[in-house]
Length: 468
View 1 (cartoon, rainbow, N blue to C red):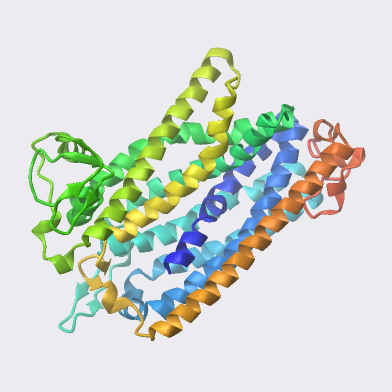
View 2 (cartoon, rainbow, N blue to C red; view 1 turned 180 degrees about the horizontal axis):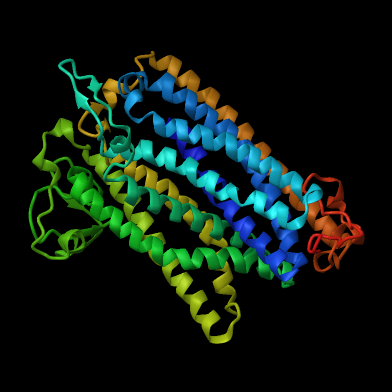
C-alpha cells in the first residue's frame, strides 16, 4: 500500500491542478486572441489526458488494495467514512467525460463554447480531492458515530463524519499544495528550455503563467501549513509530539531541526532552537506541549517512526521556505521591471522546483500516515487489527506484481510524453511561424491529425483564436 500510494500520489497534482492551469492559458488565448497561448493549452490538454489514463491504472490498484489489504478497517468502518470514496468515484467518472469533451472539442466546437464546456473540469477534480481528503481526515479525527456494546459503529452522522475537525485544514493545505506543485513542474519544463537557449515567446509564456500561479500560492501554502500543524497540536497531540520529536510533556519546549529520537527519549544530531516549539504551537513559550511518554508505548509511534515523521515534516518545511524565497525573487523582479529575472540561477532553481514540490507531497503524506501510528483510525483501531492476515509470502508476491506493473505503466507514460514532445518540436521546426499564426495547421503543423489538433479555418472566423 505504501509503494502504491507513493507512486500514485505523484500523479495527483496534475490530475487536480493541470485542468485549471490549462483553462487559465486557454482563457488568455481566447481573451487576447493569442495563438501561442492556445497552442500551449492544446498541448497541455493532451498531457492532461495521458496523465488521467495512467491515473486510472494506479488509482484502480489502490481501490482494490483497500479491500484486499485492509478488510478489518473497511468491514467495520466502511459505512461511516465510505461516502468519501463514493464521491471520489463519481468525480472520477465525471472528469473522464469532461476530459474527453475538452480534448476532442479543440477541432469540433466553437472556441468559447469549447472553453465553457471545459470549465467544470477543475471543479470535478476538486470534488475528487474532497472525497479522498474527507476519508483521510476522518481517519485522523474520527467523528459521526457511536459504538455499541460490541464495539461496532452505530448511529452514523454522515455530515459529521465528513466535516471532521481536520477536514478544513487538511483539504485546503492539500489543494493549494497540489496546484502550486503542478505550476512549478509545468514551469520547470520551460525553464529547462530557457536555459538551453529557447527564448521565444512560446517558452516565455509557457513558463510565466504556471510559475506565476505557483509563486502567488507559495506564501499562502506556508501559512496554511502552519495552520494545519497547529490543528494537529490541538486534535492529535501525540502525533504532534512525534512530528516534533517531543519526549516529555513540558513548557518552553525546544524545536529540533532534523535530529534523531532514540527509544530512551534522547535526541542526537539536528539543530536545537530553545523554546521555539512551544512558541510555534501556542504563540507563547509557556505553551504546554504533550510528549510521547505521556501515553503507553503501545499507543504511540516508535522512536524510528517518530524520526521518520519528523524528517518528512522538516524536509517539507525546508523546501517550502526555499520556495517562498524563490517566489519573492520572482515577484521582486516582476514588480521592478515587469520582466523575468535575468540570472540563470533563477531558472536553474525554477527547473528543480517542480521535483522539490513532488518530494514535499510525498513528505506530507508520510507525516500524516506515519505520525498517526499505531492507529489506522486514530484511537479507535490499530493497524494490526485492520490489516489482512494473508501469509507474508502472498503479500510479497502481490508487491512484486504491483512493482512490475507500475514500472511498465510509468515507462509507458514517459515514452508517450517523449513522443508527444518530439512531435511538437518537429511541428515547431517544420513550421517556425506556427506558434504565432492564427492557425498552426495552415503552416504545416504535424499535429493536425491528432484529436487535440488545431481547429480548421472556417468562413466565419477560422483558427484557434478566431471569433467563430
